[in-house]
Length: 367
Ligand code: F6R
Ligand code: MG
Ligand code: MG
Image (cartoon, rainbow, N blue to C red; front, side):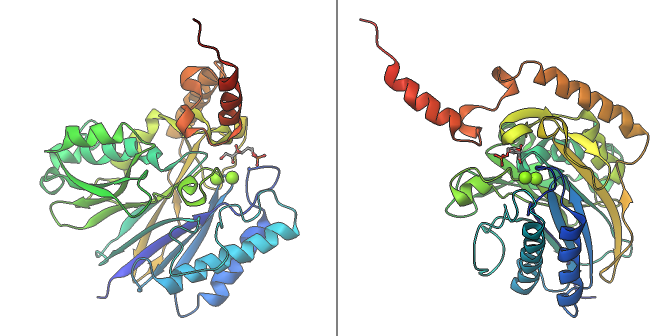
């Protein structure tokens, strides 16, 4: 059987009422484009939004970084932007940073997560999409889901999973090319932890099974600031995770999300907030947040997708959401102070930088 590729291409191309959610008209424009122009190119697709971001999930046989697939999605996002502008949506076309399409959308603004593999007889996979945070937000859940038996009991119970996983981690501060390191767990566990503790710099790009060599995870690593040289919106990430059998079970991957860990993002991409697991097509609200993550489960056969199952639409997650709200209010209580706001280097707006520059001139060295 030829391999299939699953591609997710995601962008913020405009929202109703602030950075809240895309409009129906925008979504229809994107979908119509994919439906019409994707014929003969893609096998199937699914359109989704989380907060202000629209993602196009497609299946095809063309491999990763394929220029035809990327062009199709880019042009669909351009069509969506046109609809956004026609309705006066806010930040229309925000993440489309380049004018002309080149080879693929890498470095053009949209986030990309893609995986090519041979379909197993049953092929369950998960698709996560986060808003008001950045790619480092996946560091903790992926570390716990793939390397910690406190969450992934398969590391103790399943001989295949016990062989561990290879993590590919990217240094996203290096902008000339992809700078990556490969670490094998369990041997390199502490080295991996040493990198993942700094989610603004080191980001998990992919994970592979050591038993089969098969890819389990593909995550987006885009930092918009590194493309545009200035703040143009947070880099709200997406990821694909293959599950079950040689890979962790769905529930093991979901387990760490019950922590609702504090991540970077929230208002103006400049604060710390809890990552709240939300239902499909959730919107943004309190303090332009909180940071949210949606999760959809699919099976795929010969490239045909099932309908999605909404992974966080289950009573268990109501308590997690409540706790995430409490965590959000707790940290917001201290406003700009200390850990509530991101360090100077991560502030996404230039305002403070300019203020500090102006104040620097007024400082005096006491004799
Ligand atoms: C964060 C985000 C929002 C905006 C905020 C101000 O990723 O999208 O929090 O930063 O709403 O937006 P502007 O500066 O466009 O008015
Ligand atoms: Mg936005
Ligand atoms: Mg967004």
